[in-house]
Length: 262
Length: 330
Image (cartoon, each protein chain N blue to C red):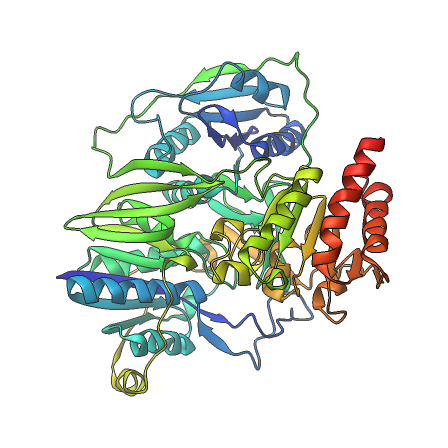
């Protein structure tokens, strides 16, 4: 029987327009559609596959505002067994290390052999929390893995490198963050969604976790101080050459005269 | 607080990755302003020319750890070496290449040291007593300014090709400092079973000056051979947008975009790529973008320096020939 914990985050769907507030203090949140982080869907899927193969339970843990319960429910609807949300205004402004401290505190009280998370969250793209969590729990880690297999107390994983990949053997318990190619996440089924709606999501505050001031804005050593739209690229020349020969000549001229690479 | 700025050396058996040298240039710039030195942290086996290369590109000091347990990269061994060195020497900042290994160990080092960390860095400056970085967020729909703080160490994980390769001065010599090797007597909990190379004839995707990238418009995996031919004449690397990866035409290692790599080459040639935001997130930092697409309304044309509307199957082979001729003529 495996105890699997999956760390998830709720993020705005970046398929929609994302705008900075006019004072640059953050992003305009009104009207945004919030979803379960794309890579975390893959982490939940991997957890469910492990459970189906080896038996066990899947517990989903999120840190965020009250609305993040919806991301936890999405994971429950996919088939996770338990949901936990840590929500507290005092967590606002926490950096990745601060969030990892909260997760470490929650997870330390849970039974686990495998901890999974997405390789990054598509809002800040930071890819900090997974490895920081492994450090704070004093566990081995493998990040951005594309394959995971368990045999007793040992996992074998593949991860991409620059121009290649490596295969690692990892002693459990351990933290794994997953790349998108590891699996194809299932869609929640209607019965799954109905069941998830009835499930109680356990809620913690910093007080109920007995966490001191080591999280939140005051403890953060990394802070996004300004948000703005990226500079727009100037669209250049668009042409419709009548023949492939003319198209090729135009590109060669550009490579020679503008880019100066030949 | 210290005045030195360190770079974690990403290397394969002593062969230093280009991004390490790019970061040395930046480290030296910041260290000089602080009145400190640029340090290169070199872990594991090296080659005869490793030291000279690091020194030539800006390292004033090479801090070196080798020996048992440091033969191949593992998270825990590198984390221990860097964290212990940080505590012993207290540099102001550590710049880490955004490579598989750098991204893997940097957050763990930050957690161990209680350090501020910023990743995906595209610009970096030292202001008064802290690093200030610029980085994309939200699929590059936002550009964020991130400030690190605290009196502890500061760590920036920097993307490839955002800083220029510094000029090499082959007469420069770096001071050598030996760092303690593996000090833990705990058995390693992660063991490297093997490393597998994806053969590339030329530069790697994140280091190449020219990237030729293919999308759904290529229609079939065998048509990537067209891009290989073009890349060969330009000494470039071949990448892809997401659909060819999802269709199994090329491995995920090729993918550029939100769910793949971020590249910033001098020239990015998008062939049969429509230009979805998720793809633009990974290549908008390119200096010049050339797009070839038969759909004149494709969003890629809105970011292209040169957009060519036409049939890629007719244009690309012609282009490969023409470049070959142009090169032969010069």
